[in-house]
Image 1 (cartoon, rainbow, N blue to C red):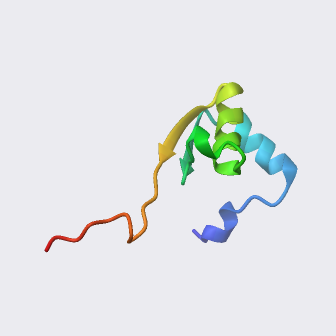
Image 2 (image 1 turned 30 degrees about the vertical axis):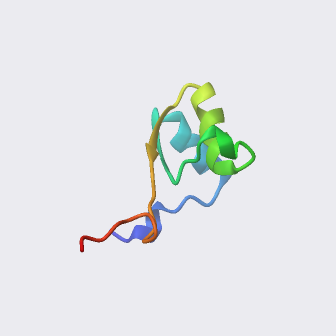
Length: 68
């Protein structure tokens, strides 16, 4: 199956997907201290609308410690 077939290109496709969805994973979700950023307020809004939000933190190489 071609992955491009899964790309949503219309509002109707997004509406249909959301009507069938209960859980949304948010990559790079931000805490309330970043309330002006979409990575905070979009998942907050979706949670208020009844979706279960699964936070998926991201880390950069600066966040990781390498064993020495």
